[in-house]
Length: 77
Image 1: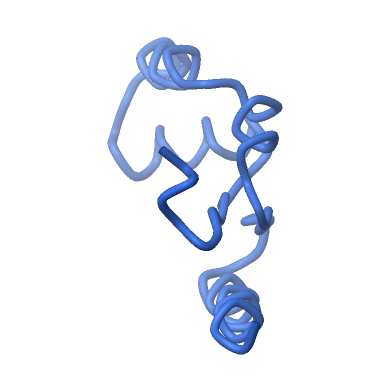
Image 2: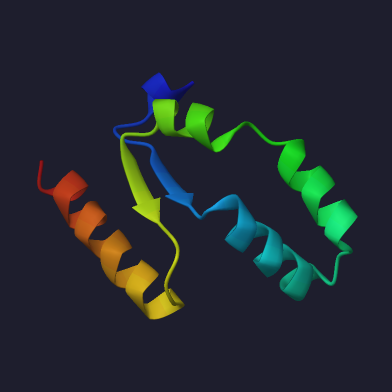
């Protein structure tokens, strides 16, 4: 399916940060948040399918700035 797109952008965060954000944002228990993470494709496998990997370890402003750089690279290619 990824062949249908010019690029695949993976926005990733370390599992511990992903867990913390899910608990805070979705008001999940630690166990439920971990179950949801465990049900997903591993970060390593997701990375194999990505054209670009965008780390999401900072704030939203930084993430948007980094994303715009990638979008400009894609649209100017």
